[in-house]
Length: 176
Image (cartoon, rainbow, N blue to C red):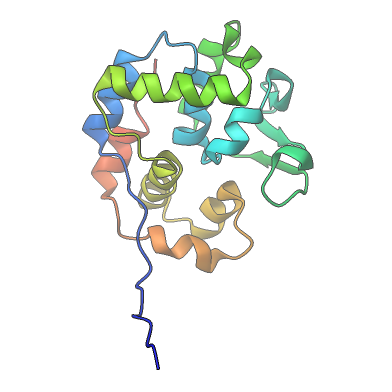
């Protein structure tokens, strides 16, 4: 009989604070920066970020409203409590063409932004970075799980211990 090797669960890549700072510095005025910020400082999946529009951002209530048709679960998600740095990046991109891009254009623009910064595109690594750094900063597993839109906090536990508190403070200070 054929025996399959046991595969250990892989931790997703996280972007170091230095690389994240460099990426956002190089791409501060880049067309896709608002959507990239949704991933890096909002924990939004890249597929959802590619589908979000300006109408999905509630600046007054500091909330993200994701209709079911753009979310992995196919259920409407409404999230509040993201770090203030997210709203600084979203405000910067509010009056740009960021929110007029198609998902394909976003993926291409994001790829070019990583190339421009000479940083490896970590795919969902920005989302993993958000969870790792926010959890290190707040130590609030239920809150991070909620913002990540995880069904159970056990899904979020894998991010514990992947970032230091000091690195978390540096990461969450990357503002325009």
